[in-house]
Each structure stands twice: as C-alpha cells, then as structure tokens.
Image 1: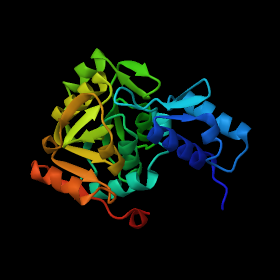
Image 2 (image 1 turned 45 degrees about the vertical axis):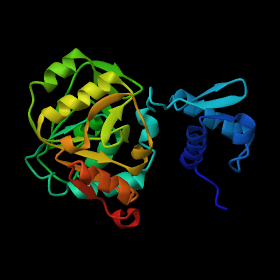
Image 3 (image 1 turned 30 degrees about the vertical axis):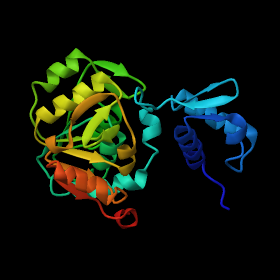
Image 4 (image 1 turned 120 degrees about the horizontal axis):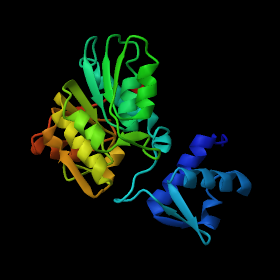
Length: 262
C-alpha cells in the first residue's frame, strides 16, 4: 500500500473523528501506517486549525452545527469535486463580468479555474480570494472590509455589511456549510447574514455545493435553495437530493464526473 501524504493522512484522521464525533487516541493510532510521533504531530496541526480538540486521551470533532472548520483545512478537502463544479460557470465568467464571492473554499476553487479570463471585477471579503485575484494583473479587485477573522480568513462586521448594501454585482457565487431539507444553513449568524446579503447584492446568485454538505446540519438559515438562480452540485450528489430541490422550485446543474473534470 502506497504511503499517504501528509494532507491525505490528516484528511483520513479528520474524517474519522468527524464521523465518530469522539474517538480514542489509541484507535486513531491504528488508522494509518505512520509512527505515533507523526500521528500526534498531525493531530496537533488539526487542533491548531480547529478541526479537532484533544482531551484526556480522546479526540473530538470541532465542526458541528455550531462551528466551522478553518479555511486552511477546507482548502485541502474535496479538491476534485470542487474542480468539477467550476466547469458549470464557463458561460457566466466572461470578460467584463463583476463577480461577488463569499468566504468558502468551494468558490475559491471555482475562481481559480478562471484566472485565464481577463477583465473581471472580483468583490469579496475572503483573503485567500483577495490574494488570488490580486495576482491576476488585469482583474479589478474590491475588498469588503470589517474585522479580520483568522479562522475563516475573511472580514466580517458592520463595515462590510454597509459596503455590501452599496454594490451590485452581475453574479454572486456562494457556497454552504450545510444544506438540509432544501435550505442553506451556516454555523455562524454573522456569516449567514453576509451570505444572505450577497444574494441581494447581485443580479443573479448561484449556490455551488459539494455532496458532503447535504449530510450536515447547522444553526443559522441563509436561504432556500430555490432563492438562487441555480444550484450547482457535483456528480456525487444523490438523485433523491437533486429531485427534492427541483420539487421545491430550484434550478439544479450537476457537474461532470470527477475524473472528467481533470
């Protein structure tokens, strides 16, 4: 069996804990072919990223209906699935278009696929997206201000909300921490409010979400899936979930199989 990379190893450990809720360290040590020191180092980094918390020989998940994992961690997850979503935005992301992005790793992956398209205007509160947009010479960049949240790698607060109320983008591309019974939710009320305002701040809004988000719950309502002009999901999303969104009036687009998006 091929040895796992650091990212693959940490993803396996994180998924095990997230699925279990709480796991014993002795059980985690049996998961991968690596030294205990290496695994303890992995757990330490996952704890720094607020994915897990360790206490008295047990490891518990931090990501619940009341919390979200860090942007740094999310950028390493479901990379192929997120890339497959990006293919569905080719007709929207064209020269001269203004695009409003939230703080999600999913929309970061969408934008990353279109750095070859010139003349875009990017509006966002997320510093990873700001850095990406700033690296493209002929893109216009508008940053939404506020207090910087290191965990989410984004600005939040009254200043950003006031700016959102004063802009009008062609398209808002938004993701979700959770989608339950056709409704989008987020663990943090400030983020949920931001996402709701982003929908209103664009001529068209688009929800980009991978299939794993339909298995999660969160506390604060953002919007109904039918409130978006379309919902873009990856091919791993079940037919039942797609049909349930169609039944409530949403327009759903399914990305190509992951292998086809490479």
